[in-house]
Image 1 (cartoon, rainbow, N blue to C red):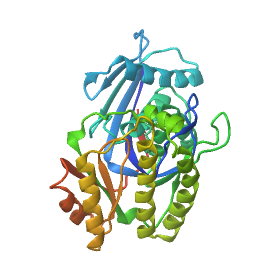
Image 2: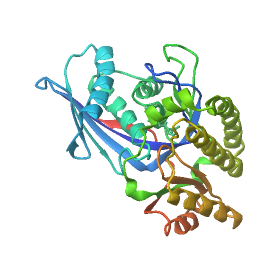
Image 3: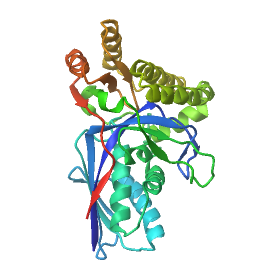
Image 4: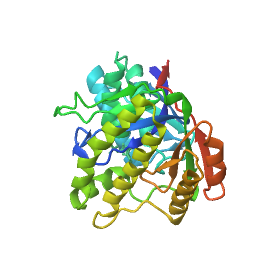
Length: 325
Ligand code: 2P0
């Protein structure tokens, strides 16, 4: 029996991933850029046990359903093929935040699973190989292998060998915070992001415009990171999130993640900016609003959002994935 436990932080994209160029290899149609969050952590233990006849998944203390177990098992097959191993595994995973609610649990989940499973299987892997492996589980998971600001490359290769994430150094890293305003108590999301991005790509008249926009936003965000310009980074992040949602809202039928409270939070973020605070909103495949801010303004932003949201979490940037045996 061999076992390993990994801890990975979720990440929130400032330039979003929304659409694939290859669903089987899970290759994104464009790059993305994110901030890893220290307050949203998944811990996953993988034990390869010869007594097991099937893979087992326990998620937040409960036996997972067949769809989640099959997705995990399919991912473990990639590692078994690489390690020339037939043994089944027991996987236990806990999130310290609401699962599958648009809070990037698949990012931290598959990053932790990739590292725990490959370590338990005895594979020696570089961070880049781990990022490529995590991407096979979930595109955003490739970014959670690293801490701080992270850039994901879309790549060109059909086998995905140039489709990985890399950390980006910036003078902004120490001085930023993300304020996470949870809407609706973290209820499960209405449309899974995998199906919703595929539906957007197939039916939205705005999808092509979205794809053409991303490289420009990436270049501008990278420029803001290298010059340490938080205002520029925040402005791009909010505009990029709105463009992603515009493409999804224009899908037929529409994919709408926002609830009335989402819009109330967006209005409060604009009001905070009007009062001179550093505050820029981003939203993912759920109703929650995440606000990029500075260490100095984080408490004021959290205090303004608390009366509107169900719960508010203030997160510092998180570190890279870690593993122990
Ligand atoms: C992101 N999201 O960049 C974007 C923004 C949601 C909105 O990455 O199909 O769960 O597993 O590769 O990574 C969520 O999509 O999708 C996501 P798959 P994933 O964070």
